[in-house]
Length: 175
Image (cartoon, rainbow, N blue to C red; front, side):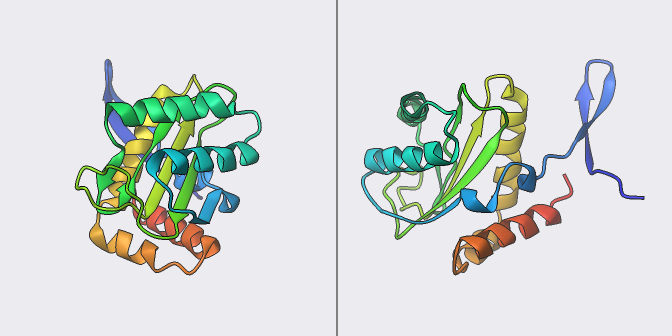
């Protein structure tokens, strides 16, 4: 018998079981965008949003760009170690999606450690998925936090290999 992975968390009445979120449920192979041009941060975000809207035509391009840039204005989502986790709640989406971007070289993303970014994980959720959005951000941070994981992901020779590596890393994390 196959059982879905679950996470136990505290709830008002005691412990509550919630399904473990798996990246493969939100990431598709064609959502791994490879060899993106290294522009300034604002131009890069415009280019990234245009590519995302081509994949998700129900999303309003200007709304998505505005939300992402507003979030970046609060504080950069470049969290250090060459990694950025931009994210937004947007209308027009039916489900949460993860888009991975791999720029041609290091991108000045105003990261917290001032280092260039070369792995971008864009998380987009519909307006009714706040909790899932936060749980997926936390899961991404856990999966991507070991230095050896980022080193391995950077060795990918193309989008298909990077996609497979991400699924393998995700499978290694029980919670």
